[in-house]
Amino acid sequence: MTRTQLIRSSPPCHRLVLLLVLLLHPCHRKLAEAATTGGQWALLQSSIGITSMHMQLLNNDKVVIYDRTDFGPSNISLASGKCRYDPQEQVLKVDCTAHSVEYDVATNSFRPLTVLTDVWCSSGSLMPDGTFVQTGGFNDGDHVVRLYKPCSSGSNCDWQEINNGLIQRRWYATNHILPDSSQIIIGGRRQFNYEFYPKTAATNQVFNLRFLVQTNDPVVENNLYPFVFLNVDGNLFIFANNRAILLNYKKNIVVKNYPQLPDGNPRCYPSTGSAVLLPLRNLQGPAIQAEVLVCGGAPKGAYASAQKGNFMGALNTCGRISINDPNPQWVMETMPLARVMGDMLLLPNGHVVMINGASAGTAGWEYGRNPVLSPVIYRPNKTIGSRFEVQNPSTIPRMYHSTAILLRDGRVLVGGSNPHMLYNFTGVLYPTELSLEAFSPSYLDPGVADLRPRIISPASQSQIGYGQQLVIRFSVSGQLKGNLVTVTMAAPSFNTHSFSMNQRLLVLGGDNVKIAGNSTYQTAAVLTPSTSSLAPSGFYLLFVVHQDIPSQGIWVHLQ
Image 1 (cartoon, rainbow, N blue to C red):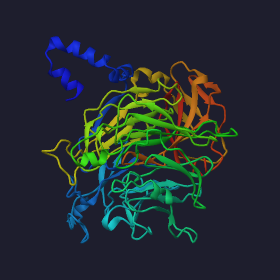
Image 2: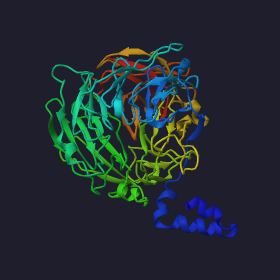
Image 3: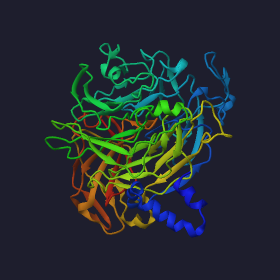
Image 4: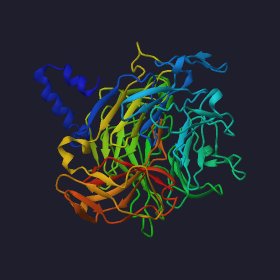
């Protein structure tokens, strides 16, 4: 029984006493202190026909969503009476329903898309031209590369599939865009190696990565969907299980070994935590600090325990590390809510939202318990002990196979949850969830609308170059505090299984603001990133942030 159920089931005369006892208990006092709430939820669609296992925002403000072809028939038909014929499919050889949709943010509508092979537990990232490259999956889809190119409204763009586009089977792998605009695909089940897409003469092979062998727990694994971030020096920070390396992927040399997390607990699938590369600042400085934050997950033994019906409590800790320090060490922090299978997203103002997940069990079929309905905001620049703030809860459990991504207007799109082998809507603890919600952080509250910037120029879809001086003109209807204005740039990430691949936020500066007219201002010239190691070429969302309140973003094409 949860705390809320216990209180509600008690006689009215006992409720106040019981509430005080719970709040004064040491393990709950920290939650009570952090319980300042904010943010609002809105149901966008009660059903999009599929469950949102994978999500990617495109530069036309549409979202590609898909689950898997072997869930059985979905609740949305393929367009024009089409059917998919696949003799290798394990559930339906003939399937006239869709397992992918395109969601239009502007119109809050969706349409079916056609995937031909199984995309279950796959990976992906955007290319510089905005094409979404999705790699691997299960069964007949595990060697397939799929392309989705954004198209204008009214067009019927769809998936293109490249059979045998991968050398090795990729299932539960991680992708990242690289400074040379290619993608690296790392790991996957029983794949202790990496490869690249697209292939060149030099990269048309597989590169062994012993680190993935070293972090593989027998039977359980705990190193699938590794957390991968492009460091500012062009090397890759790779976290798997409970530790990390810095990899020179060009030479396949480990540049640095990081210490193990102090508690030794696993944080990668199936003991699924989440991670972000914290916002990159002072981009023109001699030494750019890069910090990684890893939060939540499940303790050692949790997966085997869940298989026996015993659901251990999730981890309530985060580890934060400055990856370019000469002697990097993890600094541990305690979250107000324990969380496994949660998602961590960078918000336009540099804060982190932790959302979705459960407080017990692990990832896997039926292995999660006790949904965590309340998001938590993490403010990286606050002092330890004052960084977390619990937000208003959703009413919809988002368990295994849930997703979340940042939208251009600053909302967080949330969907998914299907901890079952097939679609299952009745007679189960957590039914398959087909809905889409939006979480609006407190910076979207109507009460601060007069402090919210509105970008006037440059126009959305503008092209920008590296090391370019950029002047942003914007308006604010209320009183402006010029020393509290920043310009940020966010890469749209691919989200699945509690990790947002290719996620990145850069702070370009902007606190030197000039008056340009009535309620209109412009920043002093801010410099765009100087190298593709700081920001690989591609589409980014650019925001003006005033007193931690971001504007609606505009798309810029860095190249």
